[in-house]
Length: 239
Image 1 (cartoon, rainbow, N blue to C red):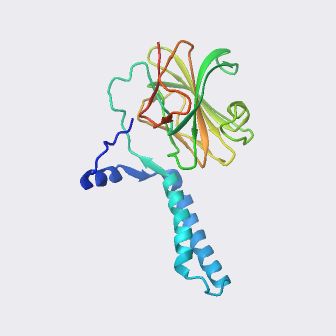
Image 2: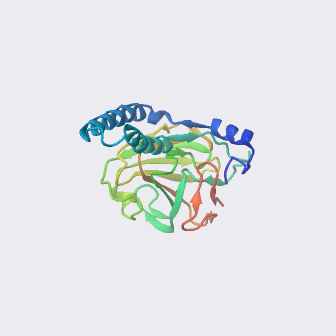
Image 3: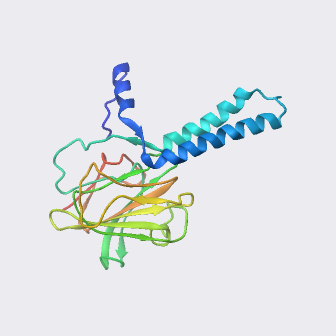
């Protein structure tokens, strides 16, 4: 579900654009990459002895820069309902790649329902809290950089775990996972603080995955291959 209504009105399109901003995690990257791309354009143009028009390099590298800007989009979203009791929303934009019961032996030591969302290079990479509650634990673990959609990535890749207790006393684990390209996980969650749907949990740079571990018996509201919108798509409902 999107916060923006489909419309052909130019005024509504402008309002939609105004609700999208660049994430703060992308500031340094965008500044650095801008100068790098400009320098590369000049160097390559001179290397070809001006046989190729300079505007050709501008188009090519401008397109690359636009992709980088697109990656660091940070849309301003609000969950469309005030009733968030027992609701679990998607913590990220992407595609559902796992919906299955697994043995979670690090924290819960029991079987849990795992729902995984894979984020491609073209998805928004900001992450949201999937539930309202209190942050019980935040832990970062170094690891490998397998492709994010592989099953072993959940345990073997670099990841950050955020354990959240809902107002009803249900513990939810949200795991940010670095992928084959991603090399930096940013987590804003702080142990002991209250957290809410609509708030940013963190950010993962350049391709990654987010897993959510839920109690067995939780109602699943998504299916394999379904696209999700962070802070908008309801992925599950707690008992």
